[in-house]
Length: 581
Image (cartoon, rainbow, N blue to C red; front, side, top):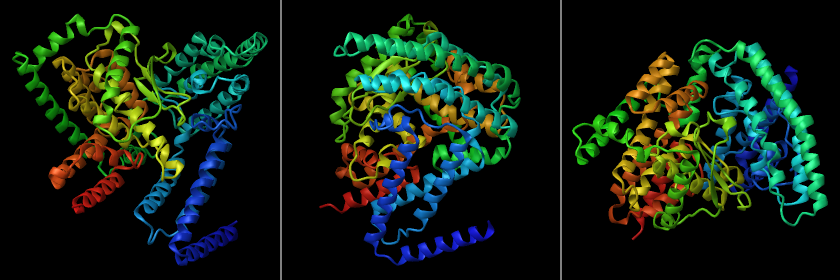
């Protein structure tokens, strides 16, 4: 074995030497061929990903979720990493160099995650395979008889997928890689909720009119049979495992640092989610400063409305029935109204515009713990992007920040950014679907304020909601690092969120999210602050040459990028703009 490794290392060195000596054009060609190869292989090994991108060649397959498959993919990834490193980027254009850097970084991060066995903890408060499979009816095409047959085939594979996930969870138990116990105890209810809701029968209610009665009857019978014999028994088995086996193994300490190699885990999570080199303590201090800055802006707005203090205005807003929803439907309608009013304003802010439609719907009851979120559609627009709105316990929610969050999740936030990226030309396919949190969430938070630039947030309370939404993201910097780096208790987190006007329903849900998904909550503010800094830099250096649409198109035109590479891209653009006569 040792001799084989030595031989492999020698071969890699030889390949690298050849690559170093080859002309730039040949190295770029080899690099692009590798990008295409990896993209095609990734779709082949991940059929659901292929479907999401409009490739239906494996539309009847769910994919392999086993430990063996994870190990095989890792081995394959190491091979790709060696191959890209054997291609010297020396002399390449800025675009080709960026492609090289992004491709290599992706596999380096995958290597680091694999070494820490992050794959052994695939569930969190936002869900897991059990909730994602429950969305099959809205994730797959259902416009032909063949596509319905594909859907039925996938239903029959759900037992295998859940059994393979049980195998992974058991490996996590053995290695001490488990969530906090009171978080894990909530997972069975998610699976039970899917059984109760039974969303898998939904396709029976939307057969295309072109289907014959015979096909409708046959497909209905086959869907019912698959759900009753395969899907629901598998979900019940999965729920029982989570309840009786998995949850009792949950850890007792909140911080990720209580896991094996905990310090390294949080450091990696922070680096991955923020794409910066800031330490947790530096991010904590930045969060405290941002909370103070935004609170001061809110106080100034309260004074303009005739209130002596921000607390007085908050109390008045929270007690005003105008801002208290009475139903789930009202919340969904509110989001749709704001997204619809923004659509015709987009050309004022962007040259690059989304081509895909977007829909708005309520998060299903079985996944009530999820926060409002966006799911991308297919590049061809056959499946639209989807804003899923949190509506659980509606009468204890507020409509105050709906306008800001609608812009965040819809347009000009996630839907615009992701739709634009899917249709970019001149970049490899792997970059069209890239989704680094610091960039994507940072853009969406930045996009919330763009409503002011086209004349929205007319109601001062709605503008208060915008600031409240930004404050909420600043609070996240404080509490996430508080939990995972500074030893905060769950109650400390909730108390701090209450202090900053986060209602109790949201505070409870969000706290559990931060506990189970370390560092993700840091991405929003870190990305937004970087984009704002770059905009200020561009305005100062370009003066009258600064064009907001051109700036936005430059931010969006490279797809999702790590923040350091985004800064390099924008600063290069500023130099080019300055040089123009």
